[in-house]
Image (cartoon, rainbow, N blue to C red; front, side, top):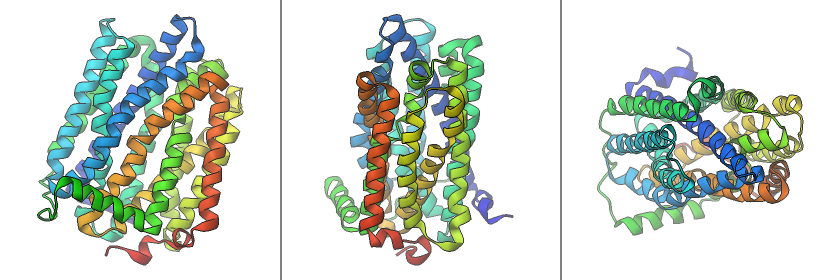
Length: 415
C-alpha cells in the first residue's frame, strides 16, 4: 500500500478520517446555505452591501466561543478520553444544524437566532482540531504523521469540491432549509463514525490545575521559536485571508454579479486548489523543508489573494480561485504537522490548541473584520487589503526567522 494512505490501515485513524470527511461536508453545506440566506436577507432589506457585514456578525458569534473553548480543548485533550470529547463535539454540531434547518423550514429564522445557534456550532468546532490531532499523534507512529495530515487535508479538499456543487444543485429544489437539513445529516454520520473509536485515555495524570495547565501550554508555544511563528502566521492568515470562503456569497453577488450556481462553481474551484495544496507536503517530504515551505506558502497566499480580490469577471475569478486555496491547504498541512511533531507528549494537546484557536476563533473574527471592511470598501477591496497584510507578515517571517526556515519534522521529530 502507498505510504500516502498507510494510516487508513489503522481502524482508529480510519474512523477519525471518516468522521472528519462527513463533518467537513456538513460544514461546507451549512456555510453555503447560511451565506446565501444572509445575502437574501440583505437584499430583502434593500441594502445588499450589508451582506458581508451580516456574514461577519455570524463569524463573530462563532469566534467568541472559539477563544475560550479552543484553548480549553487542549487541556481537555491532555486530561480526558479523546473519544468521548469527539462524540460530544459532533452531537453539539448536529443539534445546532438541526436547529438552523428547523428555523428556516418553518420561516421563523431571524438574525439573533442564527447568531445564537452559530455560537453553539462555533463552540463545538473550536474543540475539534486540537482533540482530533492529539488523538492522531497518539495512535500513529511519527513517520505516518505527514501522510495522516495529507489525508486529513484531502478530506477538506474532497468536500471543498463536491460540497459547493451539491449545494448549488440542491438550493433550487430544496432551498436553504433543505441544505441545512442535509448538513445536519452529515454531522450525524460523523457522530456515528466517531462513536466507533476505541477509548483514547489521557496520557497521564494531570500535574496541575486547569488554569496552570493552560498557562504551561501557552508559555511553551511562546518560548519555542518555530511554534511561535506558526501561531503568528496562522493568526494573521486567519484574520485577513482565510475569511475568503465565507465572504464568497457576498463577493459573487456584489462584485461579480452572479447567482447561487456560479457561487458553487467558485467554491468548487477553491476545492480544486485545496487538492493541489494537500499534495504539496507529500511531494516535498523527501526534502524535509517544512518551515521554509510554510513561510513561502503564507507569502504566496497573500499575493494571490490580492490578485483574486481585483477580479470583477467570473471567468478570471474561476481561474484564480484555486491558487490561494492551494496555499491555504499547504500551509495548514505544514503548520499542523510541526505542531504535532515538535512538542513533548504531555504538552501536545495544548500546543495544538494554541494553533487551533488561530483557526476556530480568528477565522470567524476575521470574517467580521473583512466583512465590515467589505461593507465600507467593497468585498473585493477588503480581500486585497487582507492579502497585502498577509504578504507582509509572510515576508517578515522569511527574512527574520532562521529557526523557522530550518524547521523540519524529520530533523526534530518527537521529543
